Image (tube, rainbow, N blue to C red; front, side, top):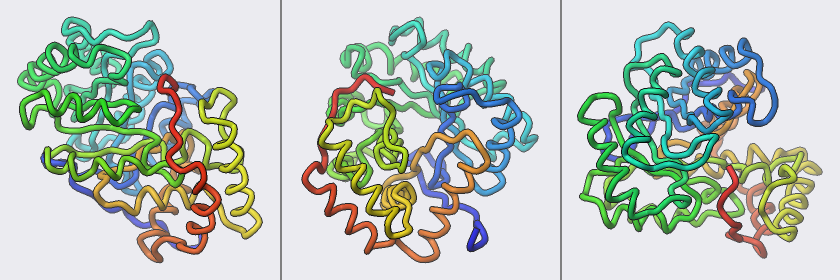
Length: 321
């Protein structure tokens, strides 16, 4: 690295009292979601992430059909540090076999997750991709069940996740204030789509913490481009490809620009990125360190934004994760 990596900034998460590292460790790749990951590599990447200041680790029973939770559990145990030194988030309601947001299933789900994670509690339990269930069931059945889990001490805080931004206002307007502590949004705070920004004042007024995932728009903002299944339009894919090529010509990296763009909004508590190797951990922390030391590359960012302007905030159907 051209400069020494430094410990990451910690940001408050809504009214929870938690402080999350500005870069969060997305553990879905540990479930072999993007290709096989050896157990030793998983443990090494989590250890390096923690050493360099990442204290927030996110998973789900859906990732790799429970494998992500198991691998993260082994890796966290191998750290050998006090439990209060890291924050763990897992999810409920979405499983390899499908969606089930019933009170019975989510109550059983947390016990299964705690077993796989080898933990006594998780800091945050999130209803996973709620747009695929009944939002009224989430309001009237799922969240009350999670409140009971909170009272039992198995979870500390309650969250909801999904792609369409309207799901968050629908639920938050229908539950008592302070019931939902956190939202996790993905693909809505990146260079090509920053529509989450419009929702931030509302979320702040509700005292809700904000986690933003997928700053690279599920691969759109990378040199390699998105996977074949990516639901973006050909027009959007083409514009992102042109932007990546423009960066490369000038010796810049579009993924680093995208990461720094997402990190620069301090209203977002943590930017969640999937990682499966020490190299990926170091690259993400280097992007955050460089941003803290030198600020955004405004020139590079302006060039990318100009290329993406015609397709800015193009949405795609939810259903891919």
